[in-house]
Length: 147
Image 1 (tube, rainbow, N blue to C red):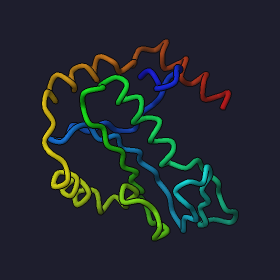
Image 2: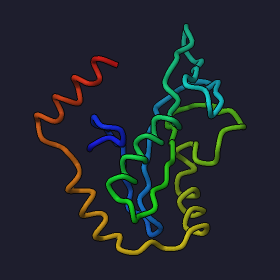
Image 3: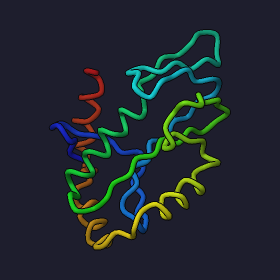
């Protein structure tokens, strides 16, 4: 879909919830993560060499911003879900979780926020904003090759 600052962005999952849209970043990892929520890069220890990867909190906030731009009247929430056998630092925000915690996270979200209105119309608008044609996918892959 169109990014929040021009270009394109790829959203792992957009979930329609009673309180709004949830932008989900799924991260598959095995090992121990060394990170601070503000670090641009995180480290994963679990193989012969530590592996650096982009901070998924920052990544997903850009994706959530694109959703907010497309749906300005609908609340958009961000969650980063780690799958695999991974140990996360204790000091990360509440929206960085293991896959096993996802249902509890959604339950808590619904207790903290009022139900959103006009969600069906917003979901239809979001589906229309999704760019899934072959030319757009090629353009997105070209953007990735330069990053």
